[in-house]
Length: 162
Image (cartoon, rainbow, N blue to C red; front, side, top):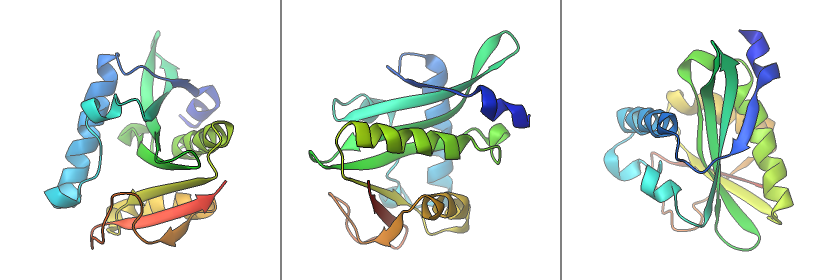
């Protein structure tokens, strides 16, 4: 399946496809399995549909239809600062470069939208190690809480200039 990343189609999404809701529900289940409820900052569908959020989905053609393999969003915090949200790769497609391609796309989108800084919250637990390494490889550095986050032993904050 290594060729799947070559066929990746990333699109700005309106969140109407029911496959996205199921995919994001799996994301919430995963986050709740590794973090206590007060430390889960993943967004549900109603939160993703807010006007300050732009959401992208990543698809590959498979068996006469498209398969949802990844998601990511940008949340506008100010005219110059955005937050990376809802980064997820399908379990079946992990390790194939989907997240790397999606992150690259979101960095370009953030720049095109005039943001000068992109920040994110992830976890310090081993489950999140691949994500942290991906972000470090793309120029993110550890930082303190931002926006409306507070200190949390289950949160790991990162940021980078664009």
